[in-house]
Length: 396
Image 1: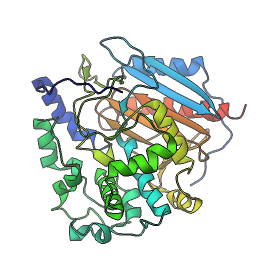
Image 2: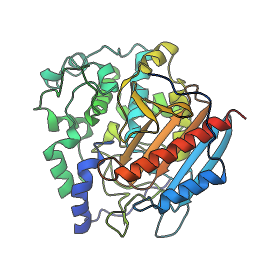
Image 3: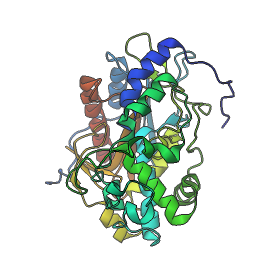
Image 4: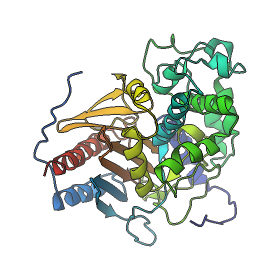
């Protein structure tokens, strides 16, 4: 897993100008009637391949896409386009990629594992574990951080944070001080009274986990998540260089596509979106995470207390929010998971509640509601068809 050893290089002016706009949205998405369990007729085999190829060819579509469907020990990989426009290499499930806000599920996995071990409590507050943070935030609980009802202002929307990124996209932030950018701000609303997706929530979750254990978040990830689930190609780096081989991420508007895989470092998103992984590892992760393999039934029950709220970008079907996980009620049935996007990448990971069937769906451009609403609607429709194929296959 070699890391690119290219020496630090100045970021071209065109890239810096794009970064000003890209950074404004990239981290914001890091940035009760159940659906019928009888799967509708779904796309299979060549039909899935055709849908993915049409997505890649769509105006503003990603240069590459890869989906991994796993059902009861069987794996199907569907891919379209290329992993690298310069070489024409096709995407692989072993390519590294930025997983964007699906990293929030990893912080959930750490926190809920500590709750299961009685090291943390869901009703524990910021004031109890992180008294150095603003007093106005002290009554916010771990539960509210995990289901985005905390009211914490989003550090990634802070003018100073965005200004630093626009001037130097490779800037190395102190990840444990990201909340300083909004430390002078009050809560956006009374904790528990509203749902509002915020990148600050998962930074605070990681800091609470560190305070409770005395261990660094990166070590907790390895001990509580990577090792139990057998993840061998997943890391939380600080810099901007990618591990080889990797899915190159692109900004496709305006053309020609620009490679933004290494536009931003991971230090400015950290526990909210900085992880680098592979489709193969993400498949292992979501099967274990959604299936409750990391903690006991009592914690799983708390995690699945659903409230109104959607992931960013929204996943397929009707979205509701749990603790660092979302419920996607599609026309064919329910899967649990998370989405995310980052410059050059849009991600969906989802699995059935028992973890036996899973979908990892990755594309190599950023697709979200604010910039590309029509393309996002198309992406969600294709993702729902893949979910339907996944659920239909299990019944044969």
